[in-house]
Image (cartoon, rainbow, N blue to C red):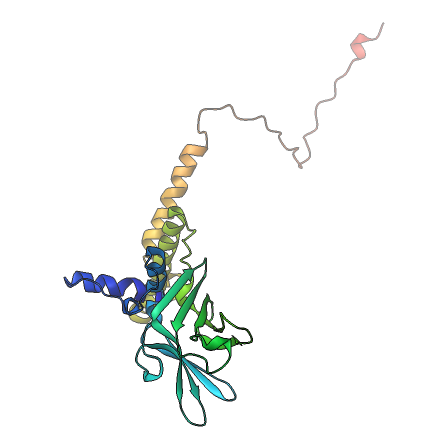
Length: 263
């Protein structure tokens, strides 16, 4: 669904005769590069949405190239639960993006400065957006690294399908053809069976759609197989054995051999 939205949205705008504009173009890269711009465009399905995570004292609100918590220019804000005060952790007009195989690391820099620690440098946020197979998108705080003099940061993690790589289909043309053929056959048999049973009122094998036609095809196939595979040439009949008659034979005349004796 997210993949389809990511592809169809810019195409629809182009077909309307207007140059496609990405909401992620609101993010201003610190150093312009094609690879970083492409990485941001992959996050287009996540735009116009707020991701929130709550801790004991603070809540964090994150938007992709949008005003988090309604704070102008803030991509990620920290909200104090007691007072409702917002602190900009990072701004989307100072962005960097690094793309991996199934993740994108998004940097928001130029946030409000620390009061005392981290040499009072500007806050920055790092959001690791990782691929997930789950339908739910989870946003969480990993850590706030502020126990040093410089290069402090907030680290967050967001699991989303938006950054999952496109897996090419492994089905061959023959496999797709077989799936289509068997699907059509299943529809034909199911629809024909229901029609014969409910409309025609057929019973038994007559419920099979076009039963007479397929029966004739079967008979013709059998005849063809019989003609091709069996030899019908003139051959001598194999010798057979005759059975012995069960009825008693007639008495044969007694042969006399007296004339053979010497006189």
